Image (cartoon, rainbow, N blue to C red; front, top):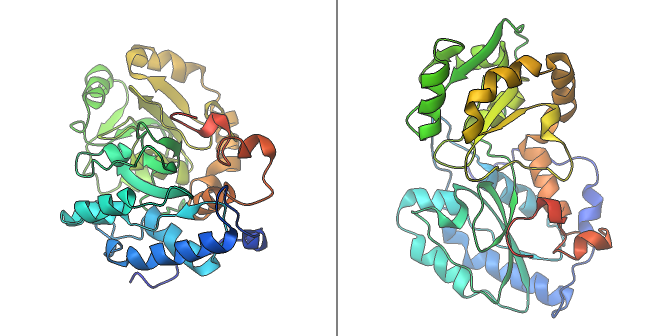
Length: 327
């Protein structure tokens, strides 16, 4: 399955062919090392894992497929490890750490990771040498002390079926993956439509809702939040400790989402009463295309193209607003 090509990036594909450069190495050196790294990490792309009824491809797989097809010449070396697939095998942690430990310090690097808590997930616990300039595009949260950029936590791409909005507010998720979910349930079970995490009609109910609760789970966000966005429903994101929202340097999440810190859960009814649903729905239509594999892959690659504005190059090709960690 892994050899199939599922995604095509449209638009400015030609710009990916700009020449690479490195602060201490030539473009040719970087290209040669990139090829070596692809070969060396072949065993660390073991095939797509399965989770919650979905068998892949996941963002890490989709990115590698498109990167391999386009052969982009970037200013950083891409580490093409399928970290989350490897994590699910329960046997490749040492090999993954060896790749990171052996990185050559004369180059700059980036990679893409889905797992909750980044490299700090307890089944990964990976470290990058302190002398390596490394940026992590993470779906599952920050990964101190690394420079980390939020990207969507995507499980698949859902298309609205055209159902009308007949439900005001719904909650469809397990309440056992994080205490704030139980707190939401206990406080609002008699106010809003609450269904368990095993509802067979969850897509219909989500699309039929104006607003859907999308609290954090094990990680700082949830698949459900991005499924909700894809289905054209306003997410009510409840976060704690870490607000993990992608593309904040491009879009204002308050235009199309209700974002609430856990300590402010009691204010949710008032926040919803004040929400301008038609305006938020209109904004969501403008931005929903961003929560897809295609847009996310394009977004990551464009960070490291030559010719980006100098203000972004000052921080590794990434604006300060999107970058977490030390800069």
